[in-house]
Image (cartoon, rainbow, N blue to C red; front, side):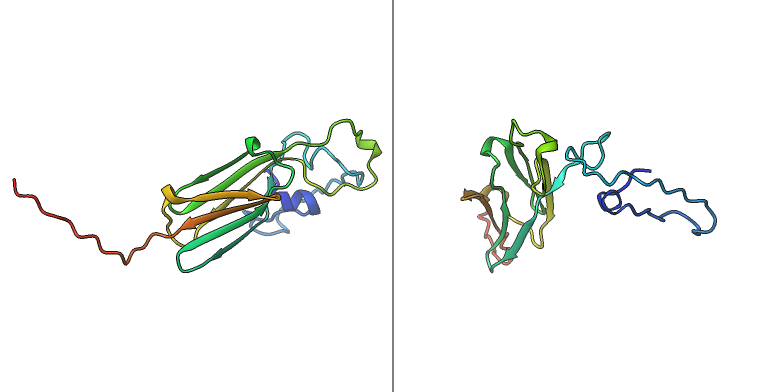
Length: 155
């Protein structure tokens, strides 16, 4: 069974699907405490999760995310009426050997985030801007109270 990101970080074990913890023998292997700068799981490359702020006004939903260090060619945003997905890749600095790091917290590599929106949006009117590393998406809400009259043609 594949471990979640949280389980890989903390070393915990999921008990989902087990009838009782006493029914099965659990073997925990202690992993090396040395940091792995290439990722938590070398066999399966992981994708980071982009941190976002989401808020709304009367007319728009706004999503903001820090994408500093990501070129616009390596950033994509896709929208439906209910879901927004932001994907990108931040290139690691070249020429620095892993053993030369004293401390490494910045995330390098692919990342994505899918956000379920609190209201339906007009996908054709979405506005995306990036300034000083801050990506801002303005998503106009659908006005469900708007009434459109239809002219009837005689045939």
